[in-house]
Structure formats: structure tokens, C-alpha cells
Image (cartoon, rainbow, N blue to C red; front, side, top):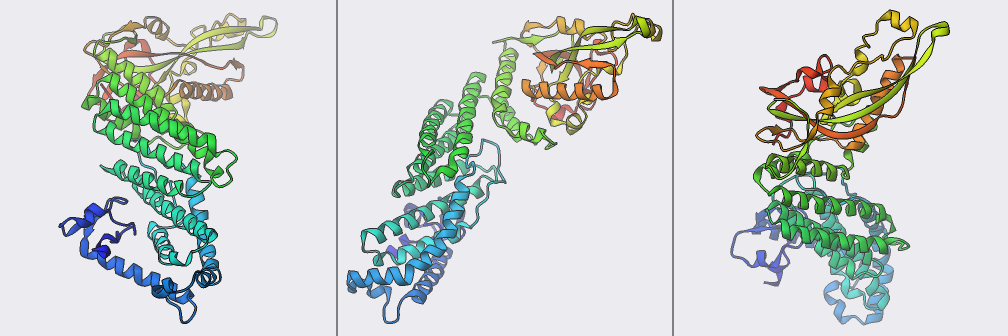
Length: 513
């Protein structure tokens, strides 16, 4: 029975859970990696593992000694065997595992709901790390002094924790049901391991915090928002404590920046639970949240970092919450006048510029206030990120109506034309959506400012007499359009200024409430 209790997962090498091993089922499921296997296969792997471990021990053991007889050898002799025959081998192998563990600790190990992280990588497999731990367990009778016991405790516990975290590297690669339960279990056991090694208290706190976040995510996905909120706050508190104790601790200082990022993730989860709770936790809301998390944003130049920053999600969920409240009659959003049946989000930009007009003694400078609209879902369109004129109402593509003679005489008042957009923007007022659908904005104020700046830069290169100031993002407004299948039909006020993004819109790709 003791042998059965020691069964190990043939996929990852982790000790199998005692309750699973005790059951009468011919199958057992690993609580670390989540795979199910036949009990006979787990037994076969254990036999193979122990054969490798004993072979390793026998190669290092001095002639005439065996581990089976170690208890009959006096403590001085055991200590000498450990120091001369095993410690050099342990030090050499453990150095590689410790380096791998530190590398992993330096990375963000949490993954947000509905998301995956294929970039979290370890230097070893969990099987390798668990097998090394099995070697340490086999030679533990040789560690008889305080120093050797301390060495063995650190080596075995940190390596075991490393193996568990390697399993989590695999779990974050796939958005499958139950992964947060497995991750929480691994983080929890890793926390216990770190708690037994002096100097690793910050790592213990971090693992406890990540376990809380994972448990909260599982509750959130199951609709228990109130309990999830408590777990997220508890996890954040643990991570903050870990962060405060990391500085100056040379053993775990490498994880400082990763913990700060995980605190940001905790904040995003807290805000997410608040928004989901305020939106009613319906299937429609959860589906919208899932799609926001799973959008693959184009990785174009500097945009890759901006769109990969999860801090942006708080603003997106906040705007989504306002849309839901407006849709259900519990709140208002800024809606422009019009009879369209679908509300399309735009960032209203105040654009100031000046230009030189006239010739010779009639030359003068003219200052203009212009209206610019940015399609609020431009971030999912790579053509907009590479060519910002596709994302905006390109007011400089249509010249002012003064004519060539006005340019010579200095009577020009504008070299742009926003047509009827000024009046459309001015008509925007707080209102409920009524029975109209709403497209959820997918960009943030900062991103709108960036695309507007890129537009200004692009225009400045071809309009040499133009002097443009930094664009000012005024507000997010919703403009009524007509839905035409999976396309949008713009209101007349847009004239010839319909952004390329709108013309290319496929409504099936967007989040619509």
C-alpha cells in the first residue's frame, strides 16, 4: 500500500494525489498537470523512475556501501559519504535547476481569463525536476548534520517548487476548463515548499497570492462574482507584501518586476469582477468579456507594446460597462443625433493647425480648429496601424472650398474640410441607447491620441505649409449608423469622409450588444 501511495504521474513526474491513488478506479488523474492515466501506467513509470534513481545513487556510492544499509552506518561515516561522494554532484546539477528556477521566477506566471501565454518558458521539463527531487529523497538518510540537512531541504524544496511551476507553464498555453484549479494547486504546494527554505518568504507570498488569483478566476468563470472579488483582493494583498519584501533579498530579487506586473493583473481582475457584476453577469456579457480577452491585436511596430499592455483592459471594460447600462436603460452614453439602428463609437479629436496663405505682401498665417473622428475599433485593423489615414475622417483629403484665387490673395480660411461632422459632433448628448445595438469600443483614450498623432505626422509630410499642434482627445461619442448585413452605412453628415476602417468593417468580427 505504501508503494501505491507513492505513484507518480507518467506525464509530468509529480506525485499523484493520495485520494486518487486510494480509489478503486483503474484510472488516476494528476492534480498537477491534469492528465488522466491508467493506474498500471503510473506504477510502471514509478518503477522506471526508481530504477534510474537507484542507478544514480549506486554510481556515486563508495564500494561496499548501499542506501539500504545506510541506517546501520554511523553518522560520521554518512556525513563523509554525503560530502565527498554526493554533494559535488548535487551542486553541479542543482546549479542548472536553480538557474532555471530563477529564470522562471523572473517571468509573469499569471494568465488572465480566456487568455493564453505561449511566451512563459522554462529551461527544464517538470519530469526532470521531479526526478531530481526523487534523487534527493533517496539520499536523505545521508544528511545527518544541520548543514547537510539545510542543504538538502533547500535543494529538494526549491526543485519541487520549480517542477510545479513548470507544469503551470504548460497550463497557461491553453484555455481549457479547470486549468485554474490545477494552477492554484501547483502555486499552493510551491508556496509550502518555499516556506521551508530560509530567504524564500517573498516567493512563498507570491505563490500564495497567485493561488488566490487562480481560485478567483475559477469562481469568476463559474459566475460567483462576489467570492471571486474577495479572492482577487486577497491575492493582490499577498503580492503587494511579496513585492515589499523582495527588494534587498538577493535570493528572489530577480522576481521584482514580474510581481509588479502580477499586481497590475490583480487590479485588472478586481476591476473586471466589479464591471461584470455591474453588467449583470449575463451570458451575453461573459461572451463579450471573453472576446475582448481573446482578440489578437496586430503586432505592428510600437503598437505591439501598447496593445499588449493589460492595463488598457480596465478602460475598455469601463466603457463596455457604460454601454451595457445604456443598453438596459440604467445609464447614458454620449450619442449624436440620427436615426440609425446601430451606435458606432468614435473618439472626437480637437485638431488645431495653422497654415500660410497668400503670396508676396498678401502672405499671412491662418489658425483653424478642426473636428477629427477616430474609429474606436481601429486597434484590431492592421491597415489602420500602418496607415493612420485609414482610421480617421481624413479632413485633409478634401481641400477647403476657397479655391486657387483665395490662396493667392491670402483669403483662404482653411485647407481642410470636415463637411458636416462639426454639427454631428455638437449634437452628441447623454442618452440611453433605447432599442439600438451598440458596438463596444476596443481602443483607449491613449491609443486614440497615438493614432491621431500618427495621422498628424503623416499629413505634415505632404503639406509643407502646414503647422499642426498635438491633437486633443475630447471624448468618446456614439454615432447612429444603419446596419446593412455585416456592413455599416454611414449617415449623410460624413459625406466623403467615411474612414477606411468603417468601409472595411465586418460586423461579425466586432462585439455588439
